Image (cartoon, rainbow, N blue to C red; front, top):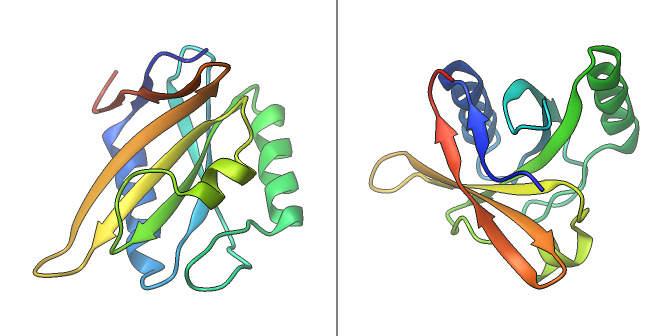
Length: 138
């Protein structure tokens, strides 16, 4: 189990920019890195679902996961945004979550000014565990 997610600031900024560009729709992507939780790559994916949901283009997801493997990285997390929402998992998020991956949620709000909040979760046998997200140089 990954106990924390370590995201270098430039990669965190890339993920937040993806969420912001996608407004008012949800966005989705993958985070790749090492088993100690260090993120080394952000893989934005095309969302083929409606405006208040996310579903990654399956072929794009396959290509991203293959590129991560080819770079000796593991898929650590699936991230998606909640425009004007909270950084918590919805019932649908939980229903479709892949338990072996962290689920990272980005809450993006436009009013009165652009803000964002991120939280990550791991699904374990006993339920849902929040995993700290640390941004900066690690």
